[in-house]
Amino acid sequence: MRNRIKISEKLNRTKVEREFQLVNSFYFSEVNYDENGNFFDLYFPKNGLGITEKQIEAYNELIENLNGHLTKIIEYLETTYSKNEIKKVDKLNEIKLKLSVVEIIDNNKDFDTVVISEKEYNYFGIFKKNIGIRTEIKNGRIISMERKSDVLKENKKTLYDNV
Image 1 (spheres, rainbow, N blue to C red):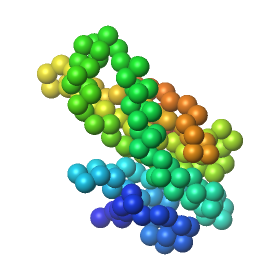
Image 2 (spheres, helix red, strand yellow):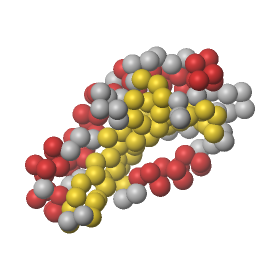
Image 3 (cartoon, rainbow, N blue to C red):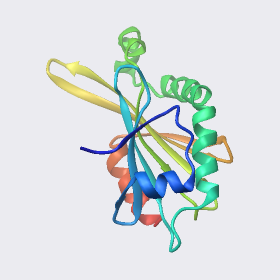
Image 4 (spheres, helix red, strand yellow):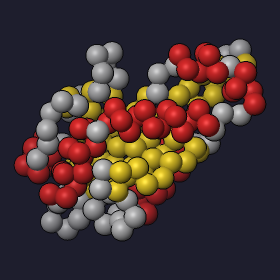
C-alpha cells in the first residue's frame, strides 16, 4: 500500500526523505485532501542532494493558500467551457473540481509549483469527458492556467523535462 499523508500535515525535508517513496528521481506520496478520501499525487523531484527547503516552503505555502487557488482555478475553468459545456453548465457546476497531481520543483525559473486539477462528466451516454487545468505557481502566486485535452499526459512530459 502506498504511503498517504493528510493535507493538514506540515512537511519538512526529513519527513519527506524518510516517509515518502523514492521513485526514480522523485519523492512521492499521496495526499488525502478531503473527508471523502480523495487524494492527489505529490511529487518532489530531487536534485543530487535530495530536496531543498525552497521546495518544502513552496508546498506548505500552497496548502495554506489552496482554497484561494482552487477558487481562481474554478473561475478560470468556467471561462473555457465549450458551447456544449455551456449548455450543461448547471451540471458541470455541481461536479467538484478534483486535484490530481501537485509537483514541487526547484530548478525552474518560471514556476515552482504545478497543480493539475480536473472535472470529469458524462457527455454522451456512457462516454466521459475530462476537463483538465494545468496551473503554474511561483512564490505563492498563480502565474498561468491552461486547459489541456490530456492534462496528465502532457504534465508527465513536462515533469520529466524538468528533472
